[in-house]
Length: 78
Image 1 (cartoon, helix red, strand yellow):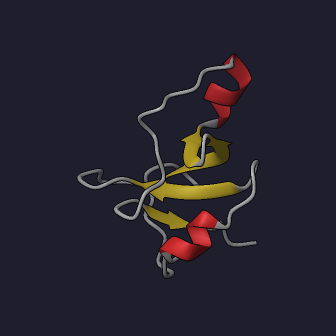
Image 2 (cartoon, helix red, strand yellow):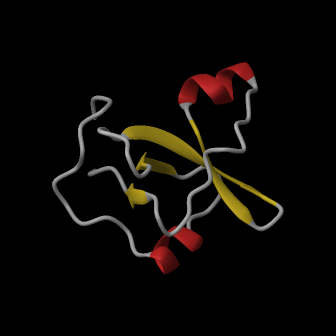
Image 3 (tube, helix red, strand yellow):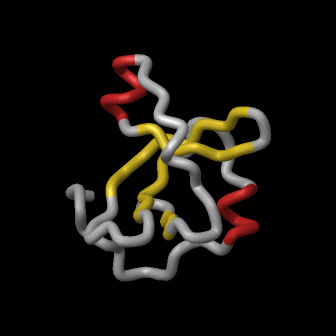
């Protein structure tokens, strides 16, 4: 999937996002963003975060990228 393309299939429900295991690949978009990007799921202290491939490679962790009920989250099509 190319960055910034919003998927044309339904996003996951909140309970589905909560069930995602560590390391899952997702597509996410936050409110007011115009596009979606691919991320890796990271869990810490009961919260679910999204890390980009480049963040994972660089060892960067942005606590602002929390996957919440206002975040649209999709699984990539296989």
